Image 1 (cartoon, rainbow, N blue to C red):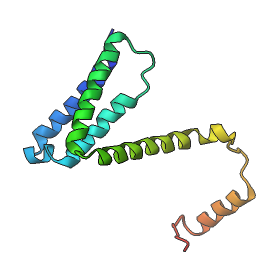
Image 2 (cartoon, rainbow, N blue to C red):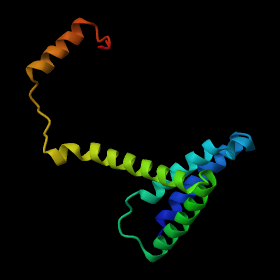
Image 3 (tube, rainbow, N blue to C red):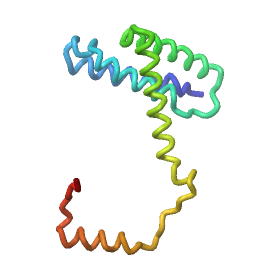
Length: 135
């Protein structure tokens, strides 16, 4: 059985190696690059992998330790780390809400166009599909 966590982590390492070859060393050690690496690791850690084997659980804990170490390098202050974590959490909750909003609220997309949508479509055709900003 393949270790899915190490496979994803290997993809992140390959991504990092590609950038190390393309750009100078000062770019790879910059905070912006480290933040991008941190975001990729966060995606690996927070993807829904289903039921994990014992080996995958262990590798996930190792990856979490590496993530925490990298996070401490980027954000040395505890208060900054906490605020960044809260921001990441709220952003993920917002994404989950937007993705499941239709199912939660019970909204179904109407197949029949409404009078307003028909008017809007005809107005866009008359105006040549130009975008106007209303103030």
